[in-house]
Length: 446
Image (cartoon, rainbow, N blue to C red; front, side, top):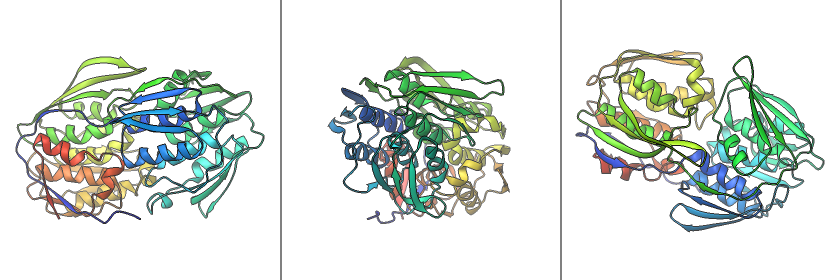
């Protein structure tokens, strides 16, 4: 049963100040649970994001036969079955709103001869699963779904899996990762190629768990990833860094609200996740990364942000995969910039929790911002630091990032900005209101 709608307004705020730690990275949290469930021994995870999306993945891994135990805030222990040891779940797997969790688990089970039924909330049941289910058939898996590859999906793992060679046709870390996870229980070596580089958490974590994996660049700027099958993963300890996609909301809020000065601790700085930070710096943001270090094979650091006058820029299309989840909040920043901000190459936003591109454009227009919609993107006409009227109501379409982005807009707009529902924020960032409120952000009910 879905949560009742909960409207909320972002209201003009005084300077945001303080030091905060945002929740653990969602992408790494999903992968730590899944690989822990496929490994031999006890995987210990600290800093796990305890949001609905990740908790649904934990429940799915448990349903496949792994022991998944919460030991304290963010501290979890996973005792895996070994690769190929997952059993048939006794019930339907409900992933709520999580495209990442559902698609990665599909890949992880696709080469094990068990059957599972996948479903989710109304939003997830509208999202295309064929993009991952069709290539998984190359391994020998079979599936049944609603027309268009929509959930509910019944997936039958391969009885006699085969290694594959596959070129991922779109810039999708989820499809690539599903194919890499499926390769673990196929004989021989599978080769997964991509023309556009996408986030590489799966590759890094597979190596940490002891998988036979190599990554080679291609002349056209892409890469090919080779995975040895019939793998034996060994349990490790995973310290989950803080999520840059969650940090983005506090960062942009501090840039837009005059007088703000904040510090965010332990943020993941994987080069394939920092496109927003680079873009904001190009726009003139006073955003400085300090105390850089390595943790568990990933770069992390602290981020200092001060209120800044921003200018419009053109975002290079090749940077899009490095910031695919951050375009809602970048669009809000662009509304307060001087001049136009041009964003192209955003086709993937059409198949996120909502048609995210259309939702961004509608939200901006509802609050007095002129936007030109392009087939693959948009041009936001910035109104300057104190020029956004606000006063509109934004339809979130059950999309957590749309909700949080437009609440941030309200903190600096002339009039409050209302989002029609904030219940789904719990899927990725349940601490959002408290954390932002602790910095000085003002939110009001209804």
